[in-house]
Length: 65
Figure 1 (cartoon, rainbow, N blue to C red):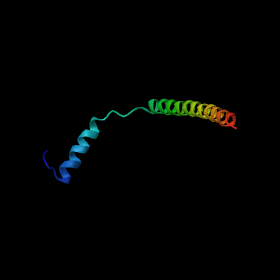
Figure 2 (cartoon, rainbow, N blue to C red):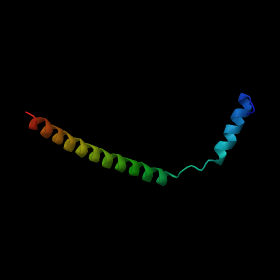
Figure 3 (tube, helix red, strand yellow):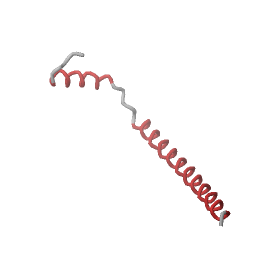
Figure 4 (cartoon, rainbow, N blue to C red):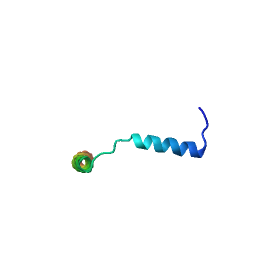
């Protein structure tokens, strides 16, 4: 691996950044909404799974008494 100086490094970074295709504003908004929706769905699933597991554990512990 060749060692490059800081000036060459920043030139290469600048050249690579020109190649990047950035998402449009609409694409970004749609992606953000999708992420929030999936987080909401996952949190609901985990909440209900936790409640069911807690109920089952309580029933098992009460059975032993």
